[in-house]
Image (cartoon, rainbow, N blue to C red; front, side):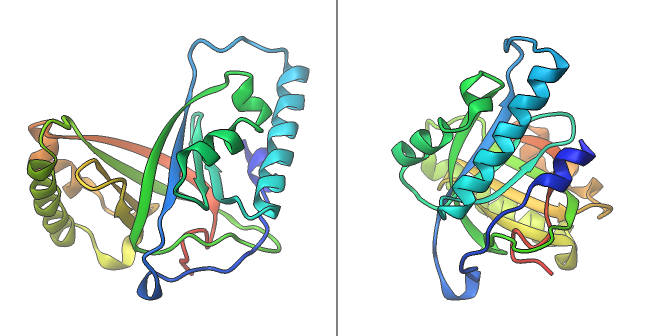
Length: 217
């Protein structure tokens, strides 16, 4: 894992701040595929090396803005577009994805706190906690919007602002993303009434990513 983390280097482009833009992206969760074929250690290492090379190529082309693995498997990609067909095409250039190593979830992502900023030069990897909230039903989007508004008020009361790295929408009435610094006290987040009554589905994962990918210092 540590070797993989040290090899992820992205090429810098313009970093947008939330204060000056309403730019959206496509955020992808790469989830381990339990049905993928087992490989030998040598083949696994070769596939991983090709995966890293493809990350660099997509970054150099300005398509991929941020990428990082989850502790325990899987990870994220953030693509510089809102066109899902383009992302599907770009994602399929990844040899590890084509090999069935992961399944994918696509979401539109609009930052409200933080930004999406490729990192240049020597990369310092850091670990954050990523909280993803998804509505349990999409039958009533207006009701979901009210649910997320109440949820956002809860977050404001429950999370110390300095501990937040990034926060944003995963689609109006669909989902929300919160990334906090590792070590932050997040116990209160589990008391959210919408999570406890399962109106919102919460997943918590540890993300390794280049420091500065979300505009943080």
